[in-house]
Image (tube, rainbow, N blue to C red):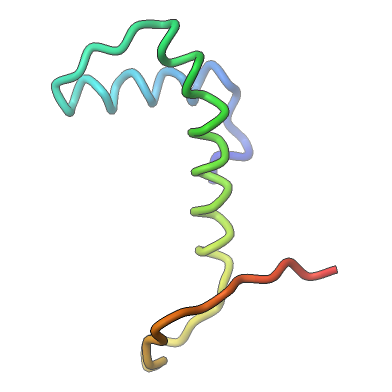
Length: 68
C-alpha cells in the first residue's frame, strides 16, 4: 500500500489525518513520527498479506512468522 509513497506523501497524509481529528501537528512532530508511521504501515501490510478465509474461526493468540 504505502510502498509506492514518498516520505513527503506520507507526511502529507499524516497532516491531513491529524486535521480531520482536530489536531494541528507541527512539521517537527510529523518528522519525528514518520519512522513510527512507516513501521505501523508495514505492520498493516503484513497482516493484510495473511490469507484468511472469512469462515476461519478466531484464535485467542497468534504469531506471524516471516518466511525465509
